[in-house]
Length: 449
Ligand code: TRP
Image 1 (cartoon, rainbow, N blue to C red):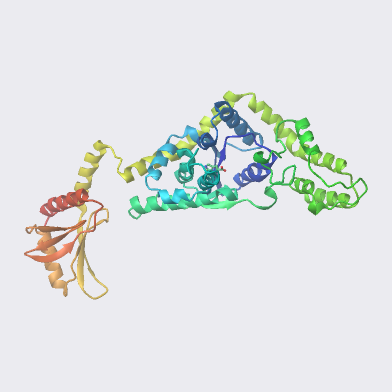
Image 2 (cartoon, rainbow, N blue to C red):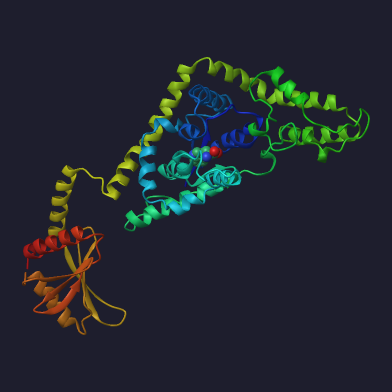
């Protein structure tokens, strides 16, 4: 069994070392496992929610695409695409929006945080809140459910969104599945441990703290950032405590166990901070110098990147297009032409293949069902005390005895000579119920004896 792993990267910034260690590197490693069927995409519709600068959006998409490829993502193995190249995603978003409870979205952290901030400032609670921000989890649910992902690697802040995708998907399955599970229930996969890098000041490395080490800006930019890593004021020759040093934590995320052990020993025996920073720089260069060259080569060929991503979109749409048509069918967005044809085909099938099946119920009573060729149950009989009366009733129906159908709300009952004999399943609406009554009449009139 392959596992479908899917994750999106919001294209609103330039990747830094923290993104590399926390998301890019582990995702690329995961995609090489033999059971993995990975879908990685640029969440550029999501980027529009927080950024209204077109140049920045465009630049970020390009940089992030080039970064992933330069870091070794193999687009033969992985489906790598831009969200905005898959029109099925916004279409599915709408289908899901129509089943997502507003109360569910009211509880989304990102939206709630904005409301809380407004209230604190004495503003209108929804001040500055767009429908994009509010519906963000529905778009994300569509990303995930469109491809029936099993696992969704995300940061902790995104767990709630994956849970919402489950909720919304389940609701859809329940409403439209008639026993079929259209959507797989996704699991959030949390990357913990060393993968969360500290930034220059020791807090989590993040653009919003302005404490990042750039990924591919060049050796000099990396060196400058490293020189700004905050350390204590111990002098050269004084013992340093590796475990309270985030410089050491950074080193740990990139070094081999032997390198890390050596670095620890050297700090304990008084390695100067300047020297320690130089070592970290060399370690990063060893891992990143080559991908950096590939990155710059890719950035200079945006047309090639475009081709790669469009190929990815074709691959993704091979899954999305047929699946979305099934979902459209499920909710009732069907071609009128197909409706007539399949309506007739269905009728023929019912007429031809329908059969009466008798069975003995748990309580010992004698019953029968009328099943369509598809196996769908059209009627189930009353509990008869003996096999003979059950057989008689089904014979009567097959022989085309005058049918007395009586509606009861969403279903109907069948009477023969004033006696109740069978009942239909409940239909989703009255039109469907009436259509079923009509086709039952047609069918029983046509039953061979
Ligand atoms: N919201 C995610 C983030 O900010 C990005 C994202 C969008 C995503 N769609 C997704 C992640 C689907 C996983 C699956 O990190």
